Image 1 (cartoon, rainbow, N blue to C red):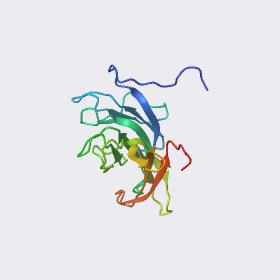
Image 2: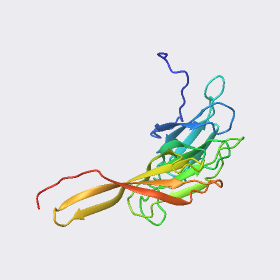
Image 3: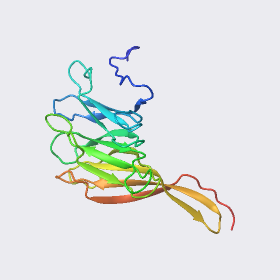
Image 4: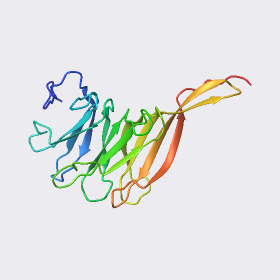
Length: 213
């Protein structure tokens, strides 16, 4: 590995936090080269701290000098781009898709969060999201983490997984301890690319303090 980077990029905006999340995007345009996606969770372009994500295509000479695709949260303090990842190929069309988390997105509930999937194609990623999901719970921070889940049910389509680390707080009356629960959703994908059902909810305790009853 070299001592100097072979490629670098900036958004040239103060406090945008470009690079807070980075990932392979897979090959979103089917040219045989892997692409990269980068989040900037406090990027401003019409809304303060709306956040953005930027995609750079790969080539025989490396990543493109300028982003080939970008999208924004379009809501104040949404922090779109908190997490970015390849989604695998969720609709089986041969192109890699991407998934992006928006930690503080509000839509009926404060800071519920949202996750978005954008499909790949011969011309690159779709201009608008092809799928979205929300937690519908206040302060759940759905989208704090996103990833491809692989093909969890063997149907030939890649599935995705989304974390929400603030979803549930439970107080056990006898032990008098507060448990903060993390929830992960695993969504099944289909040929249409619509993520149609929750596969499972995995509940993990962040804190476990046991005391005698």
